[in-house]
Length: 628
Image 1: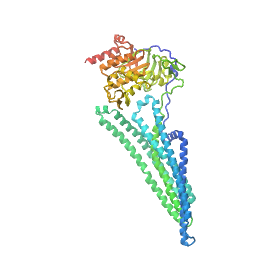
Image 2: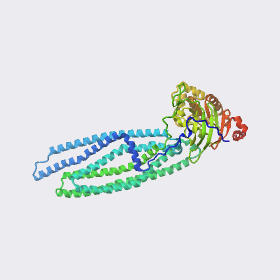
Image 3: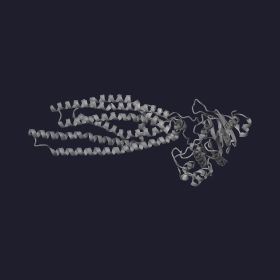
Image 4: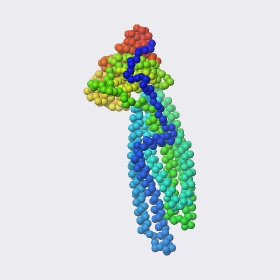
C-alpha cells in the first residue's frame, strides 16, 4: 500500500518555485560564435587596443621603407646616368647615406613596435586562456548532475584542453597577423597609388579573384573543420573511458570491441582531418599562381612607363617591392582563414559548454545553518534533523517519472532503512534529499524548511554520505579522511579512523597514514577504501547520515566491526540506510519498502514480517538463495 502521511505544513511554500531553468542559447554558426568571442575578449579591451595600435604602427613604418629606398635607388641611377652623360660629377653618396640612415631608423622603430605588440598579445592570450579555463572549472561545479549523465568525461576534458589550446594559439598568432595584414594591405595600396594608379589597377585586379577563391574554400572546408573537432572529442572520450575501466574491459575480453570502436571513430577523425587540410592546402598554390600573373603584368607595364619617362627607376623598384608585399597580406589572410575555421569550431564547443543550463541559482534570501553553540538569527536556522517527503514526484526525464507521490515523515534521530529491488528508487530518493536533483512537484523538507530555500553548500553540510562506489583522490590516507572536515586536527582524524576501524589495518601499510593513494586507488582493497570513506563521514560529524550499501564490499568480520562503529555514530542522528542485505537493517526504527518509486510497505522488521507481504518475500528469498 502507498503511504499517505499528512504533510507537515512547510515553513516555505511548496509550490513557490518550479525548479526549472530556461535552456541557454548555444553558438551554432560562425557569426554567433565570433560575437561571443568578441564579448569574451572585451574584458581585455585596453590591452587589445594597445596591441592593435602598436601592430598598425609597426606595419606602417615597414610600408614606408620601400618608398624611401626607392629614393636612394633613384639618386644612384641618376648619378650613374649623369656621369655617363657628363651632366653630373658623380653619385651623391652623402644623400644616399642620409636616406639609408632614415630607412634604418624606420626599420628599428618597426621592429620595436612589433616586439611590444607581440609581448602584449602573448600576455592577453595567456590571461584569456587562464580565465577561460577558470570559467570552465567554475562551470563544472554549477552544472546539474543531469549534464554529466549525458556527457562523457573525455568530451568535457577535450573542451578544457584541446579546444582551449586551439583558441589560445589563434589569439597568440592570428589576431595580430590579421591586424598587420589589413594595415599592410591598406598602406601598400595607398603607397602604390602615389606611384602609379594604372599599375595599381593591375595589381588590385587580382584581389577579387583571390577573395572569391578564399570564400569558396572556406565555405567548403568549414564543416570539415567542425567535424574534426567533434570527432577529436569523441576519440578522447573513448580513450578516457577505456583507460578508466581497462580492468573490466580486459576481464570481459573487450579489447577487440574497444579497438573496433576506436578505429571507427578514428577513421571519422581521419576523414574530417584530411579533407579539411586538403582544402586548406589548395589555397596557397592557387593564391601564388594568381599573384605571380599580376606580378608579370606589372613588370611589363612598368618597363613601358619607364621607357616613356613617366616613372623613375626608383619608383619602379619600390612598386615591384610593394606588389610582392601586396600579395603577402592576401596570402596570410587565406592562411589565417584555415586557422580561424578550426578555432571557430573549438570556440563554438567551448561556448556551448559555458552556455549549458546551470543549477537553479541560489536566492539571496537563502537560509543557512546555525553552527552549534551560536544563537539563531534571521535567515540562520538551527537544524535538529527531521526530514519530510511531501508528495514528491520526480523523473530524470520529463516523460518518465520514477518517483510517484512519495510521502514520508522521519523524526529527528530516527534510523530509517530503504529497501527494495534494484531500480525501485532508493538512491534517487537520497539524491533528492541532497538536492543533487530538484523534485518535479511536492517538496523535501528538513525541520519543516523546504530544502530549496537553503544554500546548497549549507544544506549539504548537514549530511554525511557513504556510497557503495568509493571515491578517493590521489593523496595520503590522512588527507582523504580529512576531506570530510578540512579544518580537523590530526588527532580528530585519528579518532575518526579508529572509530571506523581504519586504524586496524593502516599500520600494516607502508608509511601508515602518510601512504599515498594512487590515482586509481588500486593500491588498497575495496574494503579498505570503504572504511576510509566511512571514517571521512564520521569526521564530518553530520546531522543526517546516508549509508548507501556502505558495508557491501567488506568481509563479514569487518562488517560486524563497522556496524558497531555505525551504531555509535548514528546515535542521536537521523540516518538513512540503503541495503540489499536485509539482515543489516533489522534494527532500523522504520523500514520503507519501495517498488517502482512507491512505498508499498512500511514499519519495523517484525511488523513487516508479520504482514507476510513483499518485504517478507524479499527477506526470505535471501536466506533461501544463501542455503541453496
